[in-house]
Image (cartoon, rainbow, N blue to C red; front, side, top):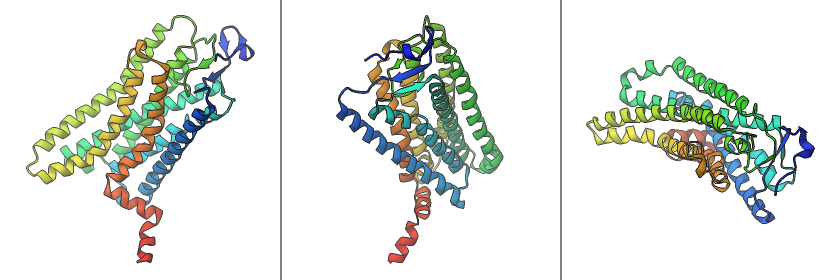
Length: 321
């Protein structure tokens, strides 16, 4: 179904409102997806909020690794909140419209949190590299000031790049149709609605995507190569196992995040399809954000203990005994 833009246009060259395409004409399918996404959204919000609270209230977790983990959980909260509420509304309501300004705002925050996460994951890999490869100098090389600077650079990079990307996209003319064949305002479906030849715009966005996604990823690979070399040189199997166990959660999160991001933004335009794009969007906006706190809490004894203290489970268990 194509949405008529004529009521929403000031002139023939500028669309003032967009509308998200309907997921399905079958109400039952939309309702099922609504409940599934809502459940994952609530699990993600609860899990990430608990991790932030556990780290902030546990002095034993006031270390660089957990400082970055708290930042990552804050990112995930913002990441999901920037797109999921409007996505849920579009699934069960006929009011699927979004203003041009609202779409630009949603795109900015989505890109902001996404790019910041790329940089933050690289900072976390650097932290693990310092901890394993230079344990004697770890405290000085990863001081509070250094960690704060890495976090500020990550958030600042996300803000600057997303501002430029959003301004670049919305400087284009959108002359209709105004229906976005997606769940939220993302780069590929919006570019498909722009008037005229957008090949130069797509090339520029691709270059930015390569720099913002691939550069931190290369830093992560470099860090893990150094970690692997250091681990192989360790004399005891127990030391190797302990070193690798501290990296396993981060490595799994990196795989989930970068796997879906690279498939979405770095594959050729000819291979894009609305169905695949929507599936990937659900994966990297909802599923990965839900899995991150589960991955870090299940595979980390210190986080699990802090979560128990935060929830008051230890006191309850001691009273029952």
